[in-house]
Amino acid sequence: MIKSMTGFGRCEFADENRKFTVEIKAVNHRYLDVNIKMPKKLNFFESAIRTLLKEYMERGKVDIFINCEDYTQDNVSLKYNEALAAQYLTYLNSMAEKFGLDNDIRVSTLSKYPDVFTMEEQGIDEKSLWLGLEKVIRGAAEQFVESRIREGEHLKKDLCEKLDGMLSYVDFIEERSPVIIKEYKERLEAKVAELLGDRQIDDARIATEVTIFADKICVDEETVRLRSHIKSTKDTLEAGGSVGRKLDFIAQEMNREANTILSKTNDLAISDIGISLKTDIEKVREQIQNIE
Image (cartoon, rainbow, N blue to C red; front, top):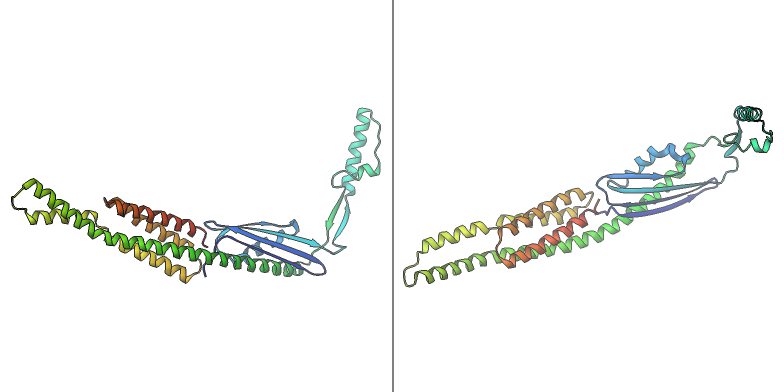
């Protein structure tokens, strides 16, 4: 299956102790770039989360948002820093004496100073926490992959239609090329006849000039390679998997062949078709950028 790099997945899981919510979204990127936003207490699991996500994705700029609501009542405790409070009091008394100020220190005032009282989380059962977190991440990742597959199928259909259109352009170029040579020969013979009048035309010289012209504008190799690249692109799309990089390389090769055809031709019809061909190749390349 072809997967788009654009996707979204969301999952929730709750038990008697906690509620987890995970959202995953992604856009195209050359490599896998994962950005995790989660509560500080879950930072311990960052490496495990990144390893887990690699099971579901290979490329893309991925943002994962994790939220955890704790329902337990005894998961935090109040911590009193007596030594710090004593230092605050010492300095406040010193200030009052030094500057001749009224010492209006109250317990309620001292307790509000930074870090005198702090909330401290109790020990966490990491195994239990990871079991719930892993479950919800996998649920969101599976939805995420499903959305990528759906989008990938749309991309595949659109690409195949464009590739069929490109084949019709190649057909036209191959059919038109011999006609150009024939027309050139007729024009050359007419011009020579006009210049020589009733004198005999040198057929060998005409044939030589036509051969040189035909060799100069020949695009047989380019059209053969274009057909091969188009077929390879279709086969790769059918094979599926993580083929974005390979398809991007093939598209670059197709663009190179189209440029060569345009540089060789002096025929307006082929030039117009060549421009249309290049336009479709660029559209294909843009679409390929979204394939994992």
